[in-house]
Image (tube, rainbow, N blue to C red; front, side, top):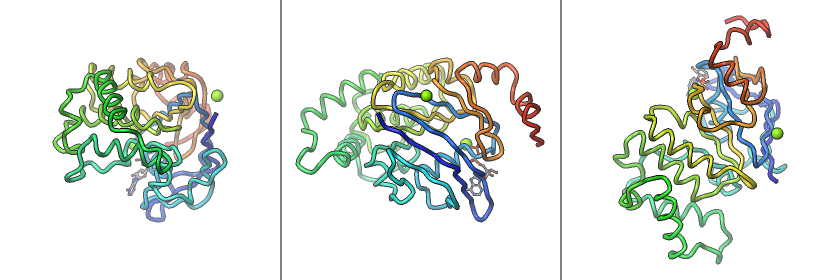
Length: 252
Ligand code: ADP
Ligand code: MG
Ligand code: MG
């Protein structure tokens, strides 16, 4: 089992404090959802885990199996087993999707233990089939001319091929029609199990109709203010966030 621990994380953007002490512990074999109103710092949390240079961690810790993630460069974070759907530049000139995937897989393997081309192609075909992706998408340049839905589906392809320990998926559901949403959800559900943990950030409960999270957290004003099971997401869908604000005495 692996553990991703976020301890009392404070993050600022341009000297403005956005995250004000976030605490979260994820284990593999768990799917956590983070919900919350707009502008409460959900994407800031994802960016801080990713190591985006604009987001300054002023205090607190992020530990992956006890290792200090904050000291790692972005690519080291990926090699250590973190997957961040947003870490990939939207377009990389001249790199095909398949090339990118193969080097990402090999980056996580020891030298001399690289995946064979045959095995890679077999796995790629199988996974693209599963995600109902046309074969030619493997040979397309990374994200070049991909529609919004294709990009999201491609992120799930990356997830399934790279097999990280933990994935942070920020609004993977945004802009998807219902068929694409079902396929993206099918991919994430397929990943669930031993050796994989997921932090899904979503503004809408809709995604959670297809992926039942083990834990749901509500973020407000830069903190996790409430945690519960999947029933918490259902209550948010029905009643919005006001009852939590009242319960906790939070003013807008
Ligand atoms: P959420 O994802 O919950 O909607 P964000 O993390 O995107 O919230 O934003 C939290 C706060 O940080 C907002 O007030 C937003 O305006 C601010 N913020 C986010 N990113 C930046 C940025 N790159 N530069 C300046 N302010 C930012
Ligand atoms: Mg648990
Ligand atoms: Mg956001």
